[in-house]
Structure formats: structure tokens, C-alpha cells
Length: 319
Image (tube, rainbow, N blue to C red; front, top):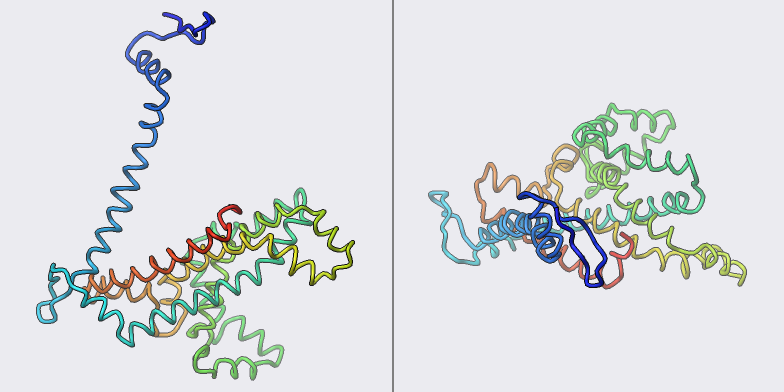
């Protein structure tokens, strides 16, 4: 066993014998080689498996499908994107974007006071219970949660029973009679879809907002109050601007997850499709993979602009 000596003569470490010892010495003397070997596997996975499959999918959007044989014509064309601009497909895109925006805004409104309480007042075991309550829905089965909500929102569900006990059935019926948001029951309406989306993605909004609020110095809020600002002025001019990066970071999750989900609208919702359902239908039963690939381009482009905006607002600093 030999000893590696520094320039000043002081021993740094003992060199080990054998193949593995020699390899260890080589990696220790060449940190760049070590870094290269450590980063190569994940970069290969990212470049070949993830980006490669994404590129292959996007490439399919420039092909078209033969109307008679149903086979894919692998010739460069923009006819699939022209088909994407049909009124029916535009309606699907607009419906999805509106629902994603509504869920994001609703999640921010519900999550902010919860995150504020956790950041300012929850301590010790209460903070542990808070994290447990937030994370518990994420540990249960995705499908079980959705089907449970379908039972809750059904005509014979507990929510309708509660409205009946409070003699507010007329209010629920009036809401369900509204064409856009209503339906036969909450379980087959856009309102029900919104509620389930909000429940499922709410933790992804709470945690970034809480992280952002914990970075706000408490003395700033106290100084605002000492200077005579009302609670509303303190929230509008001090608290919310500093917590805005956390809100935007949470909205990245809620907006993108809502835009790409197809299971919730399939189980709790109307027959009107969202982007995820359109992709599933076209690449599955219809076999129109080019159109399905063109639909997937929409969330990619939207989230590309959204991430650019979020980065400019410093959203990633709250993660």
C-alpha cells in the first residue's frame, strides 16, 4: 500500500491495491472524470428516453392519417394542425384551459390561509400534524379518491343529503340548472369536476406557498402594522408580493396537472372532452396518433410560456 503525498510533503491518503483500489485512486485524482461518470447515466436517460420519446411523439404530429385505410402517412404535412383548429377541437382546448385556470385560482384562494397558518402559527407537533394532513391524501390511491368523490357528489350522496337537511336543495338545483357549470347532478357536471380537481391538486399549491411565506421576515409584517397599515394593506403591499413566487410555483403544478389529466373528467364530469381525454381517445380507440400528438403540443407550448413567465417572477426561488 502506497501513500499519496501532497506538494508540501504531508500525506493525504493511502493508496489501495488491486483493481478497485487503482480505480478509486484514478477517480480521486480526476474529479472531472468522476463527475462525468456520475452524470452520464441520468443525462442519457433524460436525453434518450425522455427527450427522445417526446421528440418522437412531436414528430408524429407532422404526419397525417389516411381517411380510407386508417394508416399513418409518414409524409411531412401541417394538415393535422389544421384539423386541430377545427371548432370542436378548439372547444376542447378552451374548455381545458378555462378549467385549469379556475382550478389554479381556486387552489390559490383556499391554500393561502392554510399555508399562512402553517408558516406563522403551527409549531412543534401541530406542524407535524399539518404536514400529515396535507400529505395524507397523496398517500392514498388516486382512483379510490376519485371514486369516493363520485359517490359523495352523486344524487344520492352525502352532499345532496346535507343540502336536503339544510333545506337548500333548491339552491343546488338552481346551480345545476346553469348550462355551463351544471348537469343532472354534481357527479356529472363541470362543478363536480372542479371540486375533485381542487381536492386532488390542493397539496401542490399549499406547500410552495408555505415555503414562500416562511421566508417572509416576521418583522416586516410587524413594521407594517406599526406604521399604521391595516391588515388588508399589509397583505396587499407586503405579504402577498413576497409570497407571489410561491403562488406561481404552486400554480405550475396545479395548472399543468389539471391540463393533462384525463381520469377525473372521465369519471366525474360530463361527456364534453378535455385535452387528456382527446389524446387518450385519438391514440386509443380512434387510432389517430398524429392528431393525438398534435393535441399534446398544446400543453407543451402553454407550459413553456408559463414556465418562462414563472421564471421571470422568481417562482423557482420558492422551491
